[in-house]
Image (cartoon, rainbow, N blue to C red; front, top):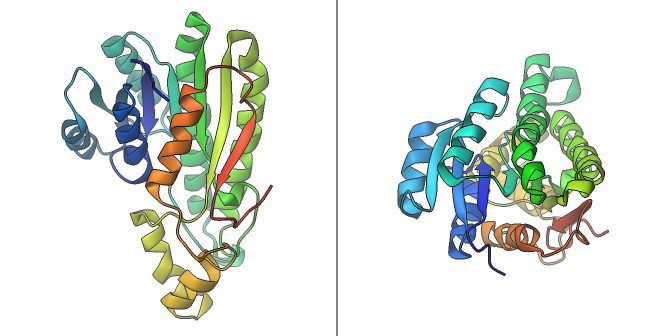
Length: 258
């Protein structure tokens, strides 16, 4: 599949899954906007991926309406429009519910759910104008399943499904489709950080966290890779019709099936 010059704004794309998707989109002939809280890291990532003709960086705190609007408008000014949104920025904080600080709950909701809402609102005005577009949200197996210690994350990722399904209906008359990618555990810095945290909270070894908590329900005890997720993101971005909309695509080595 090819993107043929289509413009993708990808949040949280200075590293991890977002960066992998940016790289794959460029390989497929797309143009990419690396949107990240850390402008220095985003700029370095953009320079590493290509020239300013095909990839630029913008500063974006996805929980700030002002920054989201400014970043989207800068992207559209640079490349003429926005064809694809990949709402990928995210964090993880783990606590049992009785010890979960409300401030941390609100932080997770702001980045995952507020961020998805704000970036959607900022990008669809360009998509609606041209009568085409693709909204791609980064969910998780936790959009469908639950795990101990992750009340805020699980709630936020379930919420992403609702937003995407609503946008599939609202966007249909504008030929804008909306879908969610639901990865299993991908060994990014975000996941690496969770291993010792969960080991401490659960009182087990880090090896057991990996084998039993993270990979225990997979069919082959393998981590999902950034490349796995990027291929699905390319398929959803390049799909030719609105037949593929309102869906959640799970990429988890069989952890969640359905």
